[in-house]
Image (cartoon, rainbow, N blue to C red; front, side):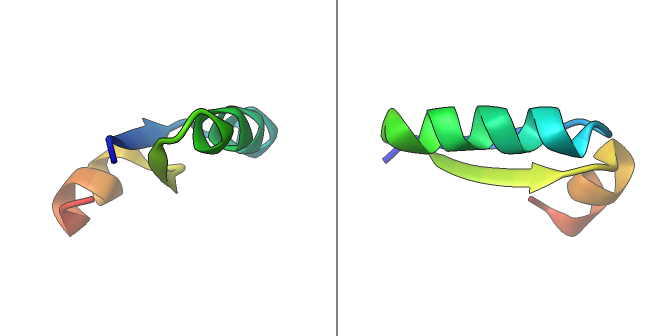
Length: 42
């Protein structure tokens, strides 16, 4: 399974994109803060 890191401060957009990508077979990790996501190793 392919994994996608999706970072955006717009939670509604992130949720919409996550739902679509999951339906397409992707594992999706989301975050609203790019620096924090990179620091956490997401």
